[in-house]
Image (cartoon, rainbow, N blue to C red):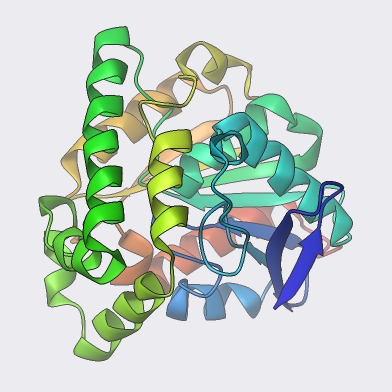
Length: 277
């Protein structure tokens, strides 16, 4: 664990492992820098993995300050922390919420992004009415977290339809994922939903055609909604391709870690033929 303090005293946790070209990992909602499991271990065999805890998660700060959790502020903090960790540019990979964050990094700080890998990600919601409805739903969920606490919320979260395919994971894997979720705080999770939820963020649909860096977009084939979104993004982005992960749901990297790691490794090494960092 390395807490990188930004100018205003806010600290972002960055965990670095492995060797090779730099690869930043951004986790999903309720995750952390330590939630990548076998997928992260395999990537660290070929890359310098720079895994962060996003705002309100893991060991990164969880202040009761909504501005800290806005997507724009989180992106600026994340880029600043990566640079202070010694990486001016890197390959970036994000899962779900982390994928939305990585897309925003690519849109607002393209000079830092050598390539983009996404798993179960979206550019947000293009329809104003959909964003309003999603913000209302996320506010109800945030209030529930504050009212009932993290453990009760995790009990609920683990059983939503989005994660149904994870019930087939080995018990040890499910226990590890749950343990990581339980390390989060009530304030951090509630404010994360309010500040950088899908309804709160600026939609990026109009920016996709300007993202010229190489991109690998992945989604589990059983995650029908995000697989369709992934195909749509790949069709618009200039240098992107879509890959469905057979038999996987939303968290494809947890359900099929070796396959996902192999795809990412082949993609990035094809861009780094000399293996230089």
